[in-house]
Length: 620
Image (tube, rainbow, N blue to C red):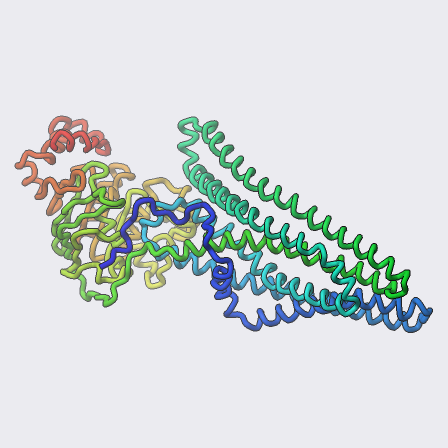
């Protein structure tokens, strides 16, 4: 069975360098999927855009008629009638442009909304191994900056580009109708213009790749340092971090300046070629006017056509700017959407009924990167309703066991069974709804306290919430908050104390009534009195449930049915509290340090805990 969740060395969301092999047409076809559901909008916007493009080239032709057919012979009545036609053309052009602009913007907003939904849905499906290796700031750049760039292209790029192409086509047709020789003179500068455009396209593509890369770096740096501002200020790192930010900011500035440099060359080149074309028209037409083979009206209309002809070309360069940026953004977004770093859903899923909560690890080995094993040949069993405790130094693999049980990752070797069923065959959602997890680092979302407890589950009643809160003693502080359970929690619960956030996470776990309860240092952030109250409540909660407890304090795990001592991903000891003490191994040494040698100090300072690393190193 292919393990799609297995992290691979150097796995990254993107290389941050131009790929060089991505076809723009392929990206545009993928983007078309988001426009396709709105055929009426697309067709209406296209028709109006083409209509505006067809109407615009009529103005120089009407000017030619006015000069040659009416002004030259003094027919003022005919000139007035033609002027009314000219005003009507202007009005129709304005209405067509209004409709085209509104509908293209509407189409773009609808398409981009669908794209954002797809990205967020995909992000929720990705395995945690993906987020382990991709900075949050970079992902935020994909979801915000890059999507907004695509919004600009979908709203004012593709359809407008089509309009410019049609307008150029109609202008060329009208110019050939008026005078084909003068048209060829005008187009004599086009080879140089095309050459300049191709050179510009080559270099500006790379420049915009660099700009997007530096934007991602800048966002990642800001997200990380704003989140960790307390540490920056606590250790006086403001100046050093400012210097790092200045370097990244300078790289972003330089990347933008490189793109500006190419535009500063390209735009004057187009203006120069336009002026040369106009000069050639005047030079060539002057001799033909003297020979009476060309009228003044045709020359004036050609001067207007040159302005109209080169204006869409300049617009095309602007659109090309948008398209290049959008293609770069689209390439990055679709690389994200193409990521397959997720736990593969079983082909023949098994949905167990009447879960008992029996958990068994059979020779499980796991590595986050290559063969740097975090767990090696781990085997143990937690019978239904048993309380299992995991102890060990930081990095010994305790949290990894929890991650594997919750199917955030899949083991490279061995298997994990729930009630005798390999969890690979159980759908993620079905598995996780039977597991309640309380972590040391509690995450709260913006919203009310009630929302953070129920996580939006409408089946959970207020009575169930209040009963669970009373069980852990959280009701005392929640009811004192403004609006009680409807108190607005700020980002990550910053206005609440660490202990209060921890209590809310307990209520969250209890209210879902799981068959398996996982506590990862769950009482480390509350005071001794609150911890004692919670431990009493947990005895009630754990009754009839399989419980897996990770703790450094041995007072938390003494009553466990089974204690597992981990060291460097290997189970070193296993048994009850008394059995492990009798073995006089690692657990016994840890117990002596925490109790026998300092009984009064430990009783007085219940929250103090010693590092397990030194104890376990000595017992190797």
